[in-house]
Length: 118
Image (tube, rainbow, N blue to C red; front, side):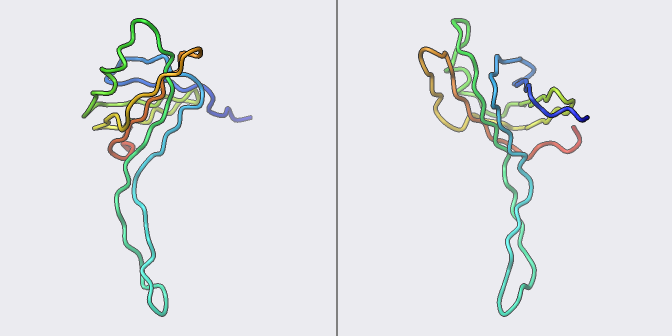
């Protein structure tokens, strides 16, 4: 029986972060739209960036502002089933959100489509 991805590790520039469950990766790539008239003539393509949404356990040794300031980084989305998806030129896309009590720090990054050579 095949293993299903469960645990995900998030690394930025080789630094492992204390990521929690439910990390999400949109691979990015090409998005196509139909070109129509009285029938379908074909399609156009545009590049769509990768998107990574994850939660980090906020601890005293973590500086959220340093994450918020990140641009042009290399982000790795490592699955416990083996694949490692690499997002190059990754940048933090929105202000971080910290939830007291649970210590959750919500983080969102975007960047180039996932590197197919990885």
